[in-house]
Image (tube, rainbow, N blue to C red; front, side, top):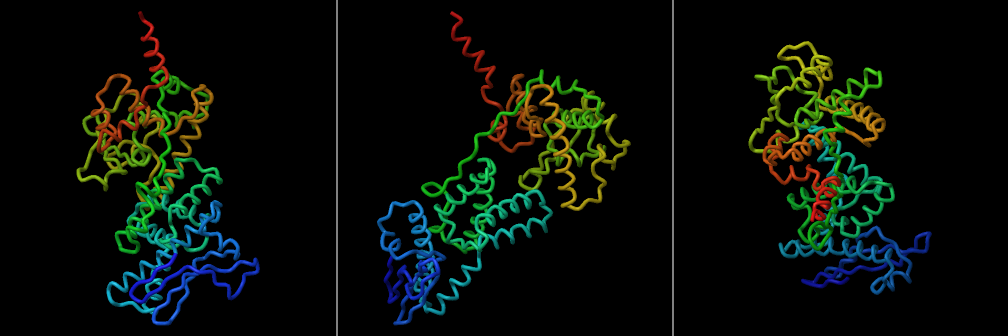
Length: 406
């Protein structure tokens, strides 16, 4: 790792002037210009023998160290080249540039993003970023410069999350939010394209294969008829059925339904998830069936245009309280539905199962995918297709038997 141009010399070196208590020495990036030298820490320490074999090693731990040193070297080299191109290079100027870059850490950028989302009232998204930041802090309590977020850093981070027992879905969500923060930094010019770690030929986020959680009509009928003598079970079962019957409505939208949203026998609402992310305001309309009306009559508020249909919100909640109440309801429904699923031998049932089942039941009945997509409030058919259970086991079994009808 050496660079020499325009009178500027840059090299990675082992600073053997003073050993650590472990016998290791710090690895630094040395910059020389007009006989003046400056040293920049890489955060890595090595024994002399490990430093000497760093260029030819195949040991995985040393390869990771070498990659991180290369990233630090590139950070210094790019800063020096940029200043030289502008005709502004000096050791003090380089110090200022690198000091600015070091303060722009991954953690600090996460904190800024979270604060912005909080001010906008986007509490759900804010909480996802908070969870991603917590994962980064568990992995690296010290500030991580953007230049350090390399392919090798991401691989080590993923290994760390797997050791914690995190699922591939959780890992993918966390990585997508790290990528979003780094994309912001790239747009702002904090990092260059050559430092960007994601994409083809770099680090590609592996998505988990979606689990098919749709229920059959027979199973949904069993749920609708299930009783255990507890009022709470009946209420949360009915809430779940309402989610299913109301086009698989999300709980965040369900809690905000008001009687004024019922127009000519139809519930009309706009999905909170897409309200601010699509150009056209997409209203979903749902016929209020007899079963839905009976659930409203049993568990709903006194009908009045400004009253919420169900007694969950008061209307004075701020964004954070609204999110917490929604999450509490989701947990309450999921807990009861999990018990029902166990009792009926169906397996795990959640609020998401209601939405997925709505789409899949219509598909099995031969409904047009475009109609299903419109009913779900999706912006494109591909999103809808991801919801649909493709070739369930019973369908594969039936098709396999067709091959022997000769």
